[in-house]
Image 1: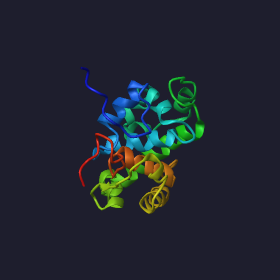
Image 2 (image 1 turned 135 degrees about the vertical axis):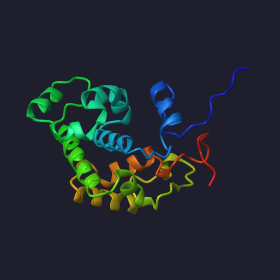
Image 3 (image 1 turned 90 degrees about the vertical axis):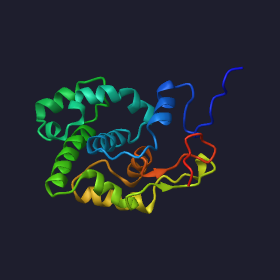
Length: 191
């Protein structure tokens, strides 16, 4: 008798192995590496107006196109590099989003140069510990929260772009700042 598929959050398309793997191995796992946090913040912004699976399928292309999300390199991109990125079919070719990655890299470096890590800055909005929610179904999960609104406001003030409160909440979910695995999901942590 084969093992039955475990129950997952309702947003996971079981016909998309990439989505299943993302849910099972990344989404909701607390992330503290500054470069990973920077990458996820940029990619969540790139997703604005699109489905996450679109970005997930392009993630390797984004990593190659944006120097593996090295803020030092991205901060120095010039118009020639922007033009090359806008010709790259492997990413979402939106000038505002491409320019946002560059602004975000510069804001990241400014934050770092002020003596603050991206990790400590972002995790401060949840008190340094994941918020564990108790949602029974996907319909209960909010699109934004007071914490994501505060994060958005602070990021915008520091020069980050494409970091509205809904994007920030999706980022918080992805990076484990909030645990929004539904109660029936096998990834659900006790708490």
